[in-house]
Image 1 (cartoon, rainbow, N blue to C red):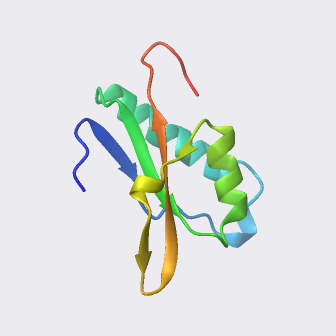
Image 2 (tube, rainbow, N blue to C red; image 1 turned 180 degrees about the horizontal axis):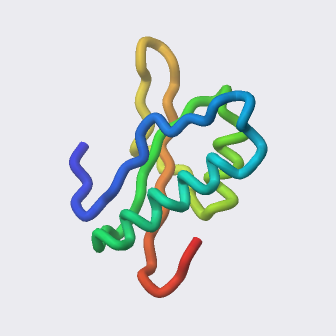
Length: 91
């Protein structure tokens, strides 16, 4: 699916020993800022049910579920999220 003026976050991961220290949030915010600087209107990403900590973080940052972006990969449900970017406001 091609989404014009859209940035995507793909395979953002944090070493288990480093989790909980804000690394994932910092990386996500950096990706959002890159998308905003590029003039994009939204950021999309995908995650899975076992990634509940990341899922919750994305929602706290303003990402919302976008079921139209969902798909299945080898039987594993993958869930789409999107964040609308507003040039004047940071997440």
